[in-house]
Image (cartoon, rainbow, N blue to C red; front, top):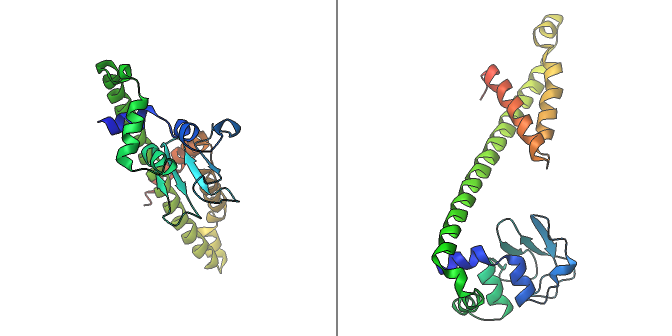
Length: 200
């Protein structure tokens, strides 16, 4: 339980500020993820990714061990100590009042809420991925059909596919946008279309 309390109470940014040589004040920390120079090797190009949304980090280049982990791992690496000792250090950092029943109840509720949000996010991403796969297959099928048009009869029968292809390509582009609202409404339109088409 104490490990979960530590991970939920001390952010990766706080750990960087307190236990590493990184000056967090000079970094734009509002992003969900950003790169800085790795504090664990001579890093000329920022290869150390901080994930503020998951409270984790990862070095992508110079660290032979492929260093990755959470707040506890970061403190252990920064102080060149064991994980168990890092846990003791971080436990001492938390004041005793934070370890009371009220705090534990609040923490459990927060963890439950975070898990629910993570599940919703995961399911949404899976739906987007499935829609992209389905639309991509449909786009390839339409392209194949269009190459088979050789006569006026074929054109009359399959000509509408010419108009459908740009819409599918627009949806595919929109599903890869960073704006969640665009992705949400595009997914809704695409799913309605695919259900009406009965295409899976």
